Image 1 (cartoon, rainbow, N blue to C red):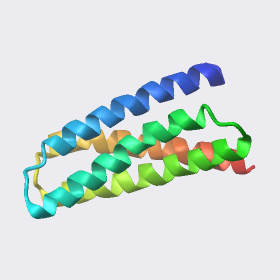
Image 2 (image 1 turned 45 degrees about the horizontal axis):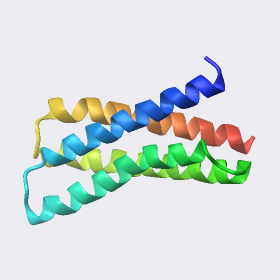
Image 3 (image 1 turned 60 degrees about the vertical axis):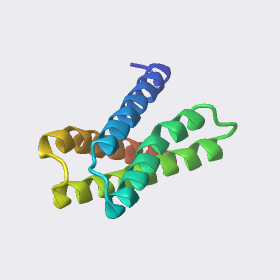
Length: 119
């Protein structure tokens, strides 16, 4: 797979992840406390794909690198919020585990891309 194919596949993957995050967020029972987590996980989880899409349309290498850094940061934040959900036991683990797995994989991908850009 060349870079262009990889980029397109990762755009699709991050968009699918955003949908998973929105569905996960929608399944969180409402409370004053959960409202904060629903908002944060939705913002960080959907931001990954939006920023990756912008990275692929970057005007410079520095802009691309900056956007990838944001993708890495938002992926890490999303993992944090999912881990909180897991520990709070508000929704079944079977609903959380595949989303957490994908979040960790995206974090690893963007961390690797970021490290490669710094070399």
